[in-house]
Length: 279
Ligand SMILES: [Zn+2]
Ligand SMILES: [Zn+2]
Image (tube, rainbow, N blue to C red; front, side, top):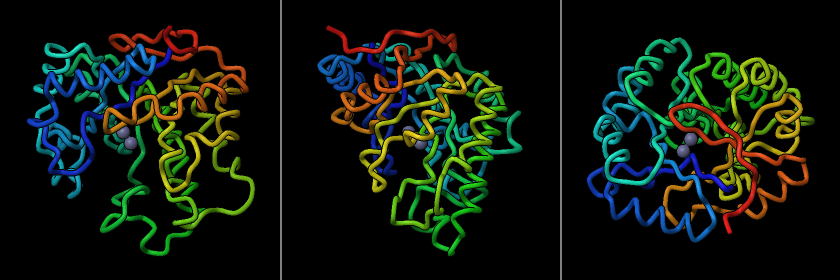
């Protein structure tokens, strides 16, 4: 099976409204493209901060600006008007675990993706006002904090999958980057993954970004596999044409590392399916 759990029905721009994109026609475009590309399991995972209910977790100015949609309407739309699985991409906000749990428990998601985009009020993957790199932040301190926070996210037990697990590298040479063997940063996170049993996303989106490398980096992926974590494969598509992006390369990488199964979820129950395109 090939899978897509981490998919958005629209680009991240604020003018891409729910009214224009949460439609049966748009869902069909995604389903048709997925089918053409051999992807059998297709779920949608909109950002929690695009929903008004997300403000119950955090009221960062970027979240306030984005919180235009209704989470109950999104859930009802996916369940009642599409053949898609219902997921959500939730930022891990340290100290707000109870609030995150409450929001998750109020909905019948098939799975919950956990992400780290922000460290404190600053973002690792956003240019402009919130860019963590704009203030001359030292790469070692940022990377250390990023992977410690990722470990906390694993230990929180809130998430089924941790997404784009080394997002902190997104800008490649366009942001400061630590020297030497990066495994020293991955280690504390991987220890937490092993204890928590969380699944880790292999995201081909990294190949579309300035860094030009899959998430997680192959050395990180090897550590994740040694820790016994199951793998969830996705492209983080924000348009139908990115579905299955570079899946041949992802499958070849998994094969080389001896990974024969991918995880999928129904009502937050995980099961493993053999890797491979539908005939
Ligand atoms: Zn993300
Ligand atoms: Zn995403």
